[in-house]
Amino acid sequence: MKNNLMKSLACALILAVMGTGLSVSAESVRMNQEGSKINLNTATLVQLQELPRIGPKVAQRILDFRQQHGRFQRIEDLMKVQGIGEKTFQNLKPLITVGPPPKKK
Image (cartoon, rainbow, N blue to C red; front, side, top):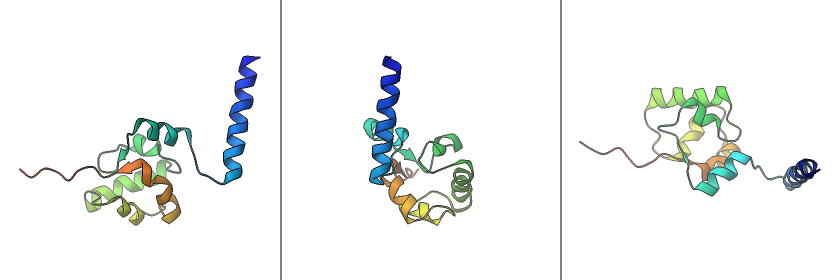
């Protein structure tokens, strides 16, 4: 009985969010609550796939872009990766970072 109630509440929440047109995932909520962001310059393929709307192909493109062009200087540089447009970037913006610049030796 308790299990069914939890499932019903979860479904109601999902439907409510979908009805508002907001793009929310459990992962993005978890990351925002913890305050941790995915660093585009150090993230692995698996870590990138934790981001909403980033599947294995786009995650690999991010890694390839980083290898070919070096560090991301700004989070906005992510839009240079094929498959990441303005709308996707806006959803990812609060979840990503490029971290501090590397220390000079």
